[in-house]
Amino acid sequence: MITQKDPTNKMMKKQNAKKYIQTVIKHIKKHGRKNLFIQFFGGEPLVNWPAVKYVLDEFSDGKKYGIKIRYSIVTNGSLITEEIAKYFKKYDVAVIVSFDSPRGEDRVLANGKNSLQLVKKNIRILKKYNNRISTNSAITLKTFRYFDKDLVDFSVKNGITEIGVVFDFNLDFYKKYSIQKIVNKFWKFCLYAKKNNIVVTGYWHHAFQLILENKHFTKGGYKTCPAMGAELSIEPSGVVYACKASSAYYGNMNDFQKIFSSKNYLSYGKHPFLRRAYCKGCEIENFCSNICAGVREKNYHSISKMHEPTCRLYKQLIKNLIKNLEPNTLDVFKLTNN
Image (cartoon, rainbow, N blue to C red; front, side):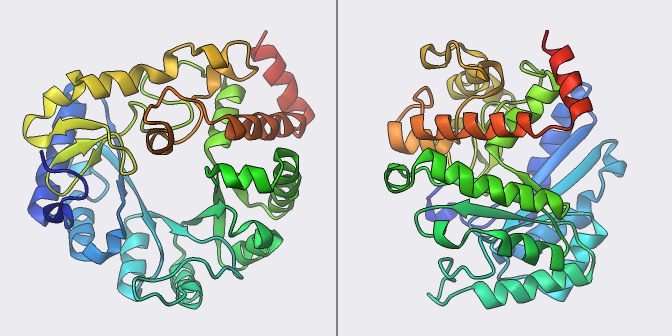
């Protein structure tokens, strides 16, 4: 089996991309589905811009294939050009840029140089063509000191409408900063973002949305992590994993139907619906499945283990969100959860 890190698994060929997507389209249409969400991921996906461009031109909005296709891309922002920005606008690609702060200096390019000024310039190019831009921002041991309202101000100025936030999973982060200190700092950030019409999202926020919609068991959906049965990570070689960060091998695109009966797919797909001993009695038990599957695999060699500090952090943030609801929304929340 070719693994994710195999040297032959680095670059997606155009024709393979077409074949894989056509296989998926055939499958979803067979089962009466009409929507497909494609995310370009990496490494850095824009290293292979010709393949991304080919997919956008070939599949467009999906109309010629009889379905609706939506796109997003997760990028470090260093390779954005005028051509790329125009294409993203043309095909309504949601652009998610890894960016922590307009003062941050911790993300570096492959050549070892700081990426900050280049990425800021390229975000302005995206804005020039009125693209949908959001950021993936991390609160970590390195970024905690400068994660503040400057990111919101930068977002407002550059047409960024959403800030996705992930918290450090390193236990040293929680040894240095208490849960309450993290919550207090982040909650001030959330309130300032809301005042400026910027949406702040993350794993914790998805659980909150499920609570509002009373959707703890949604067919085809997921709780905290989409790798739990709600997505397929298709590698250039055709091997399929739960996600890019996961080692859970599902199968191969050459035998697509077997993927859904594989041991790993069944295990990951049912995980959000199992009642774990450590979750019993938790206020958000039916709406949360803890953190990123890849992180749990790496730290605990099992997706069934709980990352306890993050669990406490998520619960506190969700409580804050519920308390901050508009009065009429809170009434609906109470009604739907009687």
